[in-house]
Image (cartoon, rainbow, N blue to C red; front, top):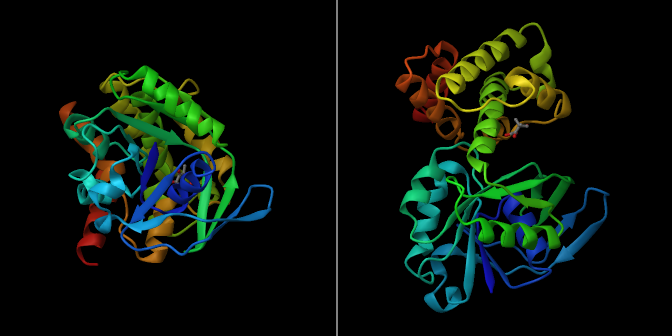
Length: 300
Ligand code: KPL
């Protein structure tokens, strides 16, 4: 009954620590983690947790023989290669849960992975203060489901497990739409704040608001043309609400830029650009941001 977590970043570490209070957990990554790990709660108290942190490539078939679920929490661009490091040594058809941003990797792995493949979308707030210290900055909610609405009982079982571990979760049959809404919000915020190196709240300033609104209009047009339901309050309403709620945040893509990591521009922008091409929609802003980040990553 072991849960394997691949990608021991902030959210992977938080998930590992929480689940380990109930059942065996292996936290696997490309480098080993110090143990114990400190976890600071949203209320500010810090606790110490022994974790079974391992190098993914060194895990043997025997280490993996009791794995009942794989949670993949790497960045989107690293998901498939990280999974490939352990895939052939896992029990046949092990259920897989994908926690990535965007919608690049989820359809591919749902098609190719031999076991049931679920997607998770979360609003839990967490960041790593160091290799040995995770801060759970704010409680959120997690939704779990299959892209085509299959595996309902497995989704419910997993959501219950996460909820018992202290991460409020719910199984849903519309995870595809929820991932699209998250992608739309990310597309309107992340490229702009990462390019101009600003916190989310500054998007409301006269210099940046027109850019944000132009992206919102392009994304809403693409979703509408493709028949993807827009959020109840409209895309603009949702995006500006998230900007207000996260005004002090450094968005994930900005953090990637500031720490010299690759950005998730493909995972966030490519599904939109592809859909726009399919439906003959114009995307000058989205295409310009995608070009900017592609050139940036090509030149290092
Ligand atoms: O999810 C986010 C991110 O940082 O990637 C947003 C919604 C942009 C909040 O910062």
